[in-house]
Image (tube, protein in one colour):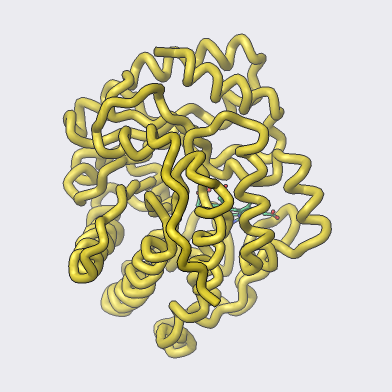
Length: 356
Ligand code: 1CP
């Protein structure tokens, strides 16, 4: 039975205020991959359960989502899942191999393989994510907002062709030159599923959405503007249209295009509320590129989390001063890494809150 109780009122809405350009009580902070392997309690739970079992079991997904919130004074939660649940829903097998990451044993090799994908009914194979989101909204009891997310089309296409992570994405990049028309079909097919998926997440209770274009780093600027941004724009526009038809308010949208610091102005024209910066981008230059009406998120180097607490505090404070209190969400410039000491998370969160 679907849970239809109204959600508890939000107590800390600094994240949503920052995204909308409103005044905040304090700079909000959360961390990409804040639920994950650097937490001993996550590792413990993973000993008992396979990765995708955690994603598919709302009680377990909620438990893991809650873990970082029990330890740290974070201003957001992000539902525990993975970007590769879409390739799974499209009929591909995805395994999580310890120490390696995701593996797709039967990748998409040629355009002919696109026939193996099953876009019909894909959304119905993702309802467990919506169930976890709804359950999490109740468990949060309004403490902080809940972020939903998805991989972006180019990033998901990359994993589906490469059969897992790749240092070069050379097989996926070969499609751009060898099969440009089939690439467009492939990206549009993924985009359609993403729009359905994000709409479902909003209906289930997601209060903000982040789109991870983590593999933008493998594209030149010219390629990024052909193979990524048109689809990012369509995701936003289609979502606005869908929700407007249902008279459901749109939630703030964040784009994280890792390695696309070359196109911040172009990203600012996609209609997203927040641009998440990777750690290579200078905050002051980024602000100059995007203008005053976009919220910036980021962008401490995850490697800085290995410094002494005093040094980490200084770097974090300097970063927050560069971004300023208005239209800013503090975060790392990519996901937190597994060996990060717990004390670094405590230091980061406290330093952000004390900085201004
Ligand atoms: O065994 C384990 O426990 C695996 C570790 C792990 C975790 C904790 C993976 C495998 N995924 C996740 C969770 C996850 N993935 C979240 C959870 C929510 C949170 O932030 O707390 C999110 C948002 C993701 C998103 C994700 N998955 C991205 C985009 C962000 C990024 O890091 O660029 C990508 C690229 C993935 C693929 C993926 N899943 C897991 C790994 C190790 C990878 C990267 C593999 C690679 O390309 O090398």
